[in-house]
Length: 48
Image (cartoon, rainbow, N blue to C red; front, side):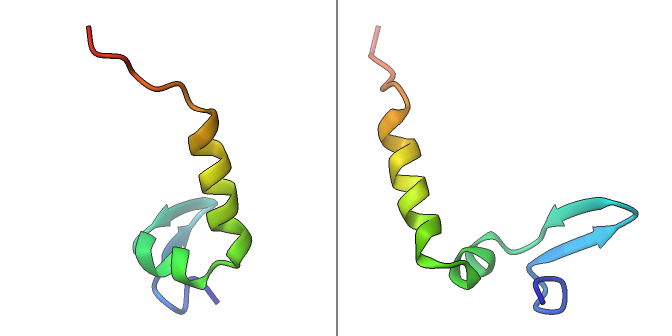
């Protein structure tokens, strides 16, 4: 499905993302929830 839609390329066991926005739009709502949680766990870089 993702390959046919042109979001990824799969050759000899290697997956390459071709269209990230398209891939994100095809994902379920839980993907954005995971992205938000991950972002909240990353440390904020402080200016030096």
